[in-house]
Image 1 (tube, rainbow, N blue to C red):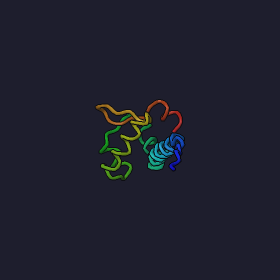
Image 2 (image 1 turned 90 degrees about the vertical axis):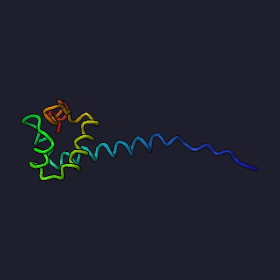
Image 3 (image 1 turned 45 degrees about the horizontal axis):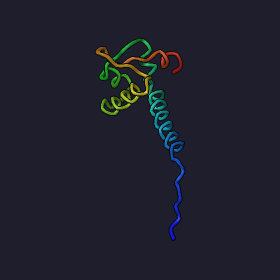
Image 4 (image 1 turned 120 degrees about the vertical axis):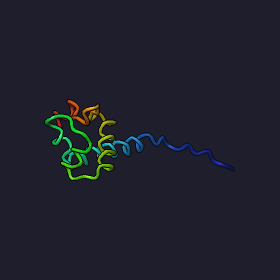
Amino acid sequence: MTTDITKPDPGVILDLLQAFRCSKAMFAAVSLGVFDALTPGPKSLSVLAQELKSNPDALERLLDACVGLQLLGRDERGYRNTPAAAAYL
């Protein structure tokens, strides 16, 4: 005799895990001073890495995560704060 046990939907847990990861990226950028460094305007990765005394490869991954979170934008001039980041971070 087997019992058919339906597992609960893990969606709520997965959503919380994703929210945690997103907030950690934002808080890491805040702690490093990324948003403050971009207040005057766009900057390249190399300039930001030098100003923030950060490893360029690691910083690029963090900055790109912030682009994905819509906290930063990126174009040919470099990275820049989005209006929401400029207003609240």
